[in-house]
Image 1 (cartoon, rainbow, N blue to C red):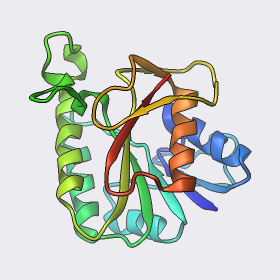
Image 2 (spheres, rainbow, N blue to C red; image 1 turned 45 degrees about the vertical axis):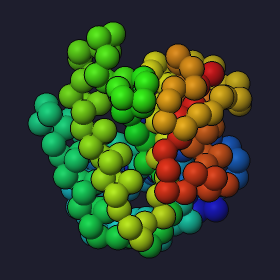
Image 3 (cartoon, rainbow, N blue to C red; image 1 turned 90 degrees about the vertical axis):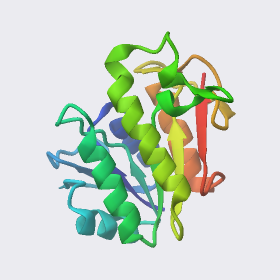
Amino acid sequence: MKIAVIGGTGMVGSRTVAEASDRGHEVDSYSRSGKNPGSARAAYALDTADTAATVEVIDQHDVTVIATVNGRTGDYAQDIENHRALIAARPQGRFVVVGGAGALSADENTMLKDTEAFPAEYKKEADAFALVFRDYVDSEGLNWSMLAPAPVIAPGERTGTYKEALDVPAGDSISAEDFAVALVDEAENARHTGERFTVAN
């Protein structure tokens, strides 16, 4: 498969590039810097605020993983704007969006981000990606899926296994390596088209 990873130099993106490359896929990495994370077939500069360029990437690959978080304005407004513009542009290709754990459900009435235990420093990002998730749910004519991590994600061990759930946490934590495994599994198998799922170790 031809796989694009937008945000290919980040913690999740670079591991997704490596995982997909190790499986024999043709992987192109896209990031603001355009640097090659080490195992991509090619690397290109891309600003996701350029909707037309982002759509072109999606439409020219079998599947695209979008693993970017800007947060440059401090309120993640640019992330919301970028995703809304992408939805409005209606790319024809398939893509997997990396979501946020904060928008998962703690119970039937409360998201994790709205619980007392949720870390305050992640609240703005969680609020933003809760809106992004809702925008995708409300969209039509898109071939999307969203993968949210467990509440804690950090570099660690690649076990190649994970637990899976829909909309509620599957566990407390996930290694960035196993999160990448789940992303590439979804890229290959498209088991969650039009919905969000989450994984944990």
